[in-house]
Amino acid sequence: MITTLWLTVIVVAMDTSPADLRSRIAHLYRRAGFGARPDELDAAVAAGYQATVDRLCDLGAADPAADALPPPKVTPYTAAGPADQAARQTARRETVALSLWWLDRMVVAQVPLREKLALMWHSHFATSVQKVKDPGLMLAQNQALRTLGGGNFLALARGVVEGAAMLVYLDANQNRKASPNENLSRELMELFTLGIGNYTEGDVKEGARGLTGLMVNRQSLAVNVNKAQHDDGAKTYLGKTAAFAPDDIVATAATSPASATYVAAKVWGHFARPAGPGDPVVAELAAGFAKDPDIGRLVKAVFLHPEFVTPATRTGLVKQPIEYVAGALRAVGRRAGTDATLVAQLTALGQAPFQPPDVGGWPQNTYWLNTSFSLARLRFASALAGKADVSSLSSAAPADRPAAAARLLSVDGWGPSTAAALAGAAGDPRALLTLALVAPEYVLA
Image (cartoon, rainbow, N blue to C red):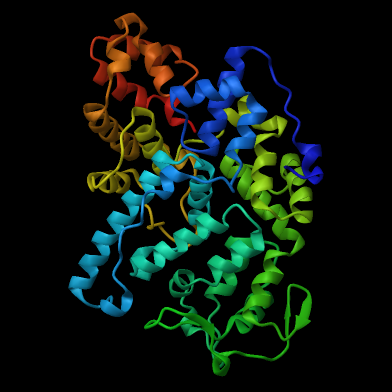
């Protein structure tokens, strides 16, 4: 049950028309997951918007379809060091296998929000296998994002920031008492919890002192605090003075008043539309999140906020490539399986799993609309349409096939330019599906 704390921001005024309800629920499925198949959408419309939000946001529910997919085996770091060429080749193969496994989880998920949150946090708490060089550490982080990503924000921050993948990525083993390394301290505040303007350079230095000694044993992969390398003196950090240990530093940043606004803006921006900390909706959400820092309830409040179903929000996001590919596979009933070309296609699209470009994660929206990525989408769409079951299109009369494609992809309808292009391809269901998959109406999230 959603707590009364959030009730002031979760009233959605519903149009009672069936077409509008279907449109809103299709929008909800795109944002809470990777789109709805026609049968899913039919069932959700029958259940209603509130019931669908309740079900999609039930992060404690079992997901037998996704959990039936065991992660691929990965080679322990101790068995293959990153300086060895054979080990690097193994790591590349294992990263491809991990990527396909996660993609399939997105495709089959019955609790798709769990995977959508893991994907959001993967960009927020960004690490890349290209530097970590250990698929096992990336898998462990991925599992942490999945299990912690819908719960208490402090637990998530501690689980990821103090996890082995992040510590390797941000050079924590170089953060020693005699010469503190500021990487983790700076990113903890700038990117993970507070945002620019809510801390000082002094906080960066004092935070680095507090994080000294937090290290990864690269043989056992255990994370612990090396007391000989930890500065146990008093530090003044974010307005407080104490002998902060690493856990204290993360907790002080993650529970700072500015953190609730920063995280609320990130969540609203990922699931609804971009907004800064001064946006009235963000302020509303942040007020509830400051008192109850539960990510799942924050996301549910987003989906039930009146602004979530406005035209500005419905057209406010562009699908990121992983969302786009997972949604397209889901719509046409395909699986990733062992098809390594999908990872190559995601790389061409600009977003391969486990490989964010830098610690800032992936950009949003117009970044994905350049010519190169548009051509890559067309190549992907053509390849997928060539393998897809198009019987729902070919069984329709040619004049009805554009509408059948809209139903298949859970799109409300096509604008004049798209409709004309699809009408011209109606005689070839695979060509029509290709065009539908790259149409602006589908590329929007």
